[in-house]
Length: 460
Ligand SMILES: [Ca+2]
Image 1 (cartoon, rainbow, N blue to C red):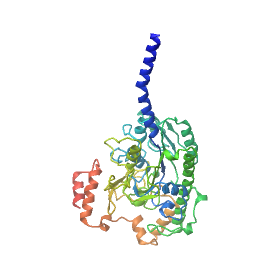
Image 2: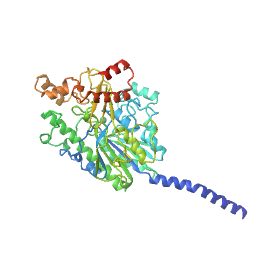
Image 3: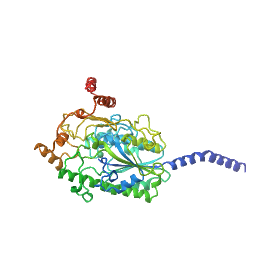
C-alpha cells in the first residue's frame, strides 16, 4: 500500500513537473504560422497584372495581393540569382557574406532562414528550381570534387526536405513535403520557380506581340515585341503553377495560418535589366499575405530590400535576427509609428558565370545606392564592352546591334545600349552626388581599391 501511494505521488509529481513544460511548448508551436517563401526567377516590377500591366494575366498572384500587401518599391541586393538569393536567405548584404562571385557556395557559417526556424521547431524544406546557394547545378567534375573535399555543399544539412525539379513538378514536391511534415510542427518551405528565366518557352501563354505597349526604355522593334511577349508568356505560366500551390493550401485548410511571401529573385533578363543596376535589374515584384496580421488589399511604396525578408519571417516566427543581419522586418510597414523604412537601398553587381571578363555579360563590377529621389551607380570597369546577361546571342540583340552599326537605331537607344557616357553628367546637383558617394563608399569595402582612388572619386 505504501509502495502504491509512493508510486502514485511520484507519478503525479512527475506529471505536475513535466506537463506545463510540454504543454507550453506545444502551445507555442501551435501559435506559430507556417511560412511559404516563393521566388520567381528574373522577374521585374511591374510585370504582374495587379501592377496595372494589361498584357499580363496573373489572376492567382493578383488574388494573393488582394488578400495581402502589394509592394511597389521592393529591390534586390544584386541583379543576379546567386548573390541576391544569398541576401534574401541570410538578411545580409552580398559583400558582407562574401557572395559577389556568381555560383559561389554560401559559407556554412552564414545563418539562413531555415537555420533559425529549424531551431524554433519548424519543419523546413526547399523545392523547385535549383536554389543556387550550393554552387552551380552544372559544375565540372573537378569543381564538384573540390566541393566534396571541402564540404562546401551545406543546404542538405540545413533543411529537412530538399528536392529540385521543373516548375511543373513543384506542386507534387510541395504535396510530398506537406505529407511528410510532422503534424505538430509548423513548416517553412522555400519554393523556387524557373519562370520567367530565359529561354522563353511558354508559347501557349504569350500575348500577341503586336498588341503590347513597348516600355519607354526599349525601341519599338518587332524583335523587341516578340521578346517581351515571350517573357510575359512565362510570367502567365508561372501564375498558373503558383495557383496550384495556393489552392493546395486551401484544400488542406492551411491558408489561415500560413504566411506567404512572393518575390522576384532579381530583375528580368531584358534590355537594361538583369546584370545591370538600373531599375529593371533590381526592382522586383513583392507580395506578402499573412491572414489576420496584414490588412488585405493594401499597397505600400516603402523602400524594402531582399535583406528584409529574413527579419520579416523571423518576426512572424517569434524570433530576432542575429546582430550581423542588416535587413529590417516589413511586417509592420503600414504602421508608421512602429515602422521606419530604409533611408537608402544598396545593391551590387559582380562576375557572372564562368566566362572570361571580355565583356560585361560575364564580368562587371558595379555598386549603387539610391533612395526615393536619387540614384548613384558607380561602375568600376566601365571600359569593358557591354553585353547583356543571358540574351547576348538572341536574335533581338543581334538585330539591335546591326541597326546600331548601320546608324539606324534611334540615338537614345544607341547611347543606352552601345555607347559609354558619364552618368553623373545627367544627375542632379554635385552636393547630392557627393552625399551618395559618401554613402556608397561606406558600404563598398572593396579590397584592392586604393585609398587615393576613393579620394579621387570623392573629390570628383
Ligand atoms: Ca534570377
